[in-house]
Amino acid sequence: MMISVGVSNRHVHLKQEDFDILFGSDQKLEILKELSQPGEYASTLKLSIKTDKDIIEDVRIIGPIREYTQVEISKTDSFKLGINPPIRNSGDVAGSASVTLIGPKGTVELSEGCIIANRHIHITNEEIQKYGLTGKTKVRVKIDGPKGGIMDNVILKKSDNYLFELHIDTDDANAHLIKQGDTVEILEIE
Amino acid sequence: MMISVGVSNRHVHLKQEDFDILFGSDQKLEILKELSQPGEYASTLKLSIKTDKDIIEDVRIIGPIREYTQVEISKTDSFKLGINPPIRNSGDVAGSASVTLIGPKGTVELSEGCIIANRHIHITNEEIQKYGLTGKTKVRVKIDGPKGGIMDNVILKKSDNYLFELHIDTDDANAHLIKQGDTVEILEIE
Image 1: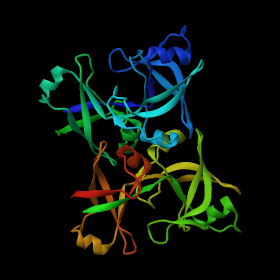
Image 2: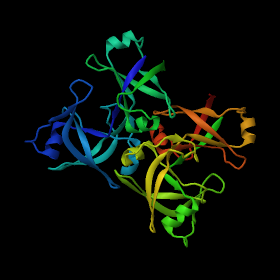
Image 3: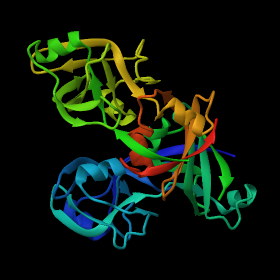
Image 4: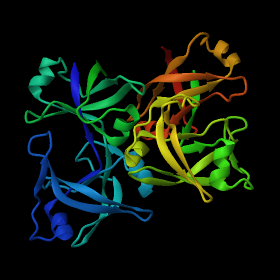
C-alpha cells in the first residue's frame, strides 16, 4: 500500500505553564498554518533551543498546548547542540535530553523533554483492518530513487482522528531525497 | 559480509589552477590528517562555498590536488545554499550545480562541480572475487538500530589501492544513526 509523506522539521510542543513563562500569560497561541493531522497547527510563535555548546533559533511552536513540553530535533541538530537525545515516541520524554528554551518573556530549563522522534505512521483503526495490520505495531517503508532503500522500525500510531500519513524527520527526508507530499510504499510488516 | 563505515562531511577537491587563485601560487597543500583511502588527506586549508542564497564557511580541502575541482555536499547543505546538485559518482561533474568558492586570496566561480556523492564502497579486485561480486556494480547495505534499514544503490568503486570501506554522507549517517568506524552489513546484491 502507498502512503503520503509528511516531513517534520525541528519543533516544540509546550504545556501551559511553560508557555506562560516563555511568552507571557497574556499571550495566546495563534494558528499560522493548519497541519495535516486534525487539530494540529504551526503557530505564529518561535523560540530558541540552547545548550552549553550552541543555540538553534527560530524553532516553531506547534499547537495546541499539550499536557507536557517536548522538543523534537534531528540527529543533525543534536550534533550542533552537543546533546544525545533518545529515539522516542511522542510523549515518552522520561529521562530524555536536557535543553534550555528561550522565549521573548522568559527561559525554561528542561531537565528532560528533548527527543528524536521515531519514524511513525498515523493510521485509523479502520485503515488498520483494511490494510491487514491488526495486531502490528511496526512496519517497513520502501523508498525509490538514487538514495532509496528501506526504513525499518516505522511505528503505527492509531487514532480514529488521524490522517493516514508517514511522518519522518529532516534527516530521513534528506538522506533518502524525499519531501513533504511524496508517496512511498509500506512494503512489509515486521 | 561486514564493512566499516566512513562518513564524509562536506568537502572540496581542487585542481591546481583553482587552488592558486584561492590560496596563492606560493601556498602548498599540507597534510592535517591522513584519511583511510591511501594517499588521501584532510589538508590544513578551508574555504567558503557561496551561492545567491547563503554561504557555508570552513569547508575542508581534501588533498592531494586533482585534475578537476569538485564540491561534495549533503542534501541538507543544498537546502541551505538553495541549489539542487545531482547525485553523482566522484569525478562526474558535467552539468552539476554551480557555486562560488571563496578563499583567502581569491574567488572561483564554478559553473559546474557541486554534487551530492553517491553512496559507495571502496573495494579491491581481490575482494571483488573473494566476496563473489564479480560483474556487479552496486550492492545494498543493511543497518541495524532504531533508525536502521537498507540503503540501496551503493556503488562499488574498484581499485587495488583501496581500503575496503563504505562511504556515506552526513545525511545518511545521521538518518540511520551510524558514525565513522561503525560496522554494517553488505546484505544483498542488486
